[in-house]
Image (cartoon, rainbow, N blue to C red; front, side):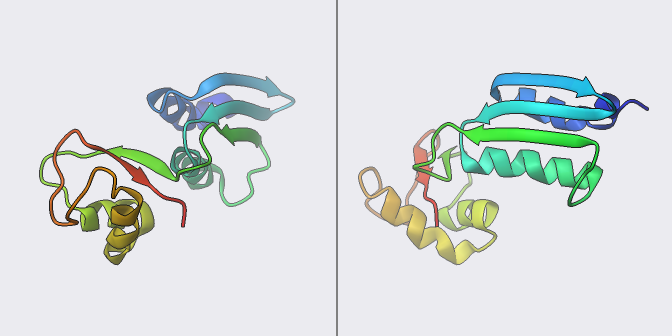
Length: 126
């Protein structure tokens, strides 16, 4: 199996996330990946996928993934049935961090218990 085939799920995720300025080359059995993720959350998703395939420190892959917007952790579009605590659990692993999301979005949210589909929320860096 070629190293590119091995890491194809990473490349597919990069396409799904619309990574900008993407470049992939293979040199002496090492896959080199370069690109710009929209947010730190997306960069983390890519690194999680890399580690899932190649381990904590893969020797057959070098990645240079930068982040376009470092002012936020992510921007989340609310879907039907979501709550701030569900969103906090998704991004931070802790539903009680909903308070930080509420604070970061006080310009559009008046009550942490009321959010609406299609609202775009800032998920702040912690």
